[in-house]
Amino acid sequence: VQLQASGGGLVQAGGSLRLSCAASGRTFSMYAVAWFRQVPGKEREFVSAISTTGGSTYYTDSVKGRFTISREFAKNSENVNLQMNNLKPTDTAVYYCAATTWAINSIAVKSSETYDYWGQGTLVTVSS
Figure 1 (cartoon, one colour):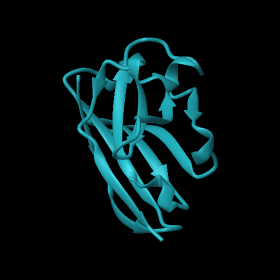
Figure 2 (figure 1 turned 90 degrees about the horizontal axis):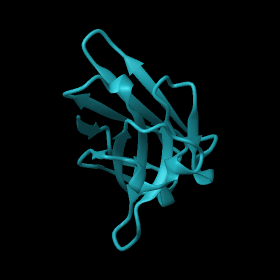
Figure 3 (figure 1 turned 90 degrees about the vertical axis):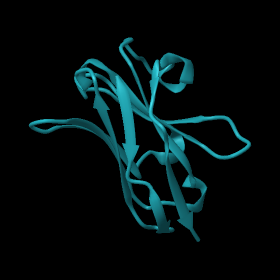
Figure 4 (figure 1 turned 45 degrees about the vertical axis):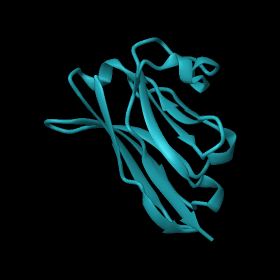
């Protein structure tokens, strides 16, 4: 499967952005999907994940209550979206979506090694 992340941009602190991860090549609902982010010079950090059915969602503590991950099933597309509200300058990073066919749990979701497929990243910049 090929992943395409989009929706990044420049926003002021307190603002909102919606990231979208689209898949091509395979049925996206077969994959658990996660969002990671990375700041230059730092390791890639887990942000959020959603199970294949959407029944389970996971968040890192710093985004709980502000970010919401969801699956969107349209007629000809399937996306995983990350709605980001009340953004902070510390949310500034390149955001990557990732997917795996493995079953995920609260521990495995946080490891980048769990995921087999990665999108190209989209830059989110939050100004103070």
